[in-house]
Image (cartoon, rainbow, N blue to C red):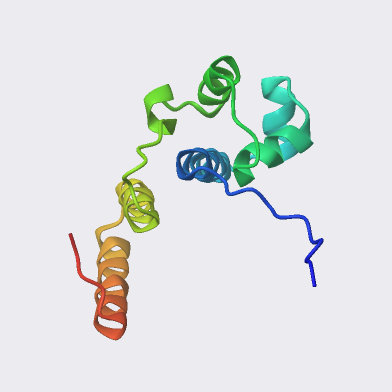
Length: 124
């Protein structure tokens, strides 16, 4: 019996990583996909595909996205060897730096320590 189900092509890790970064930085700036797409002069569906890693972002459009979001273009570049965990650590480190209150930083550090204890994660 043959399986006629269409197969979904694998998404290159670098492309998926770039999409995650675009979404992360967009959400950090509290923009919707529609707002970012409008500011970058692209269609919302295309931006959604970029964020999902389904479509490659042209260098020109990546430059516009970086400009609109106010991040260096290098912040979006992907390193194939970078794992999803490393990406999350980078994201959390960036967000941690945005917290001004020592009290709030302390609460966050205690929560992270508890998660490490519960899940056996190894810090870098």
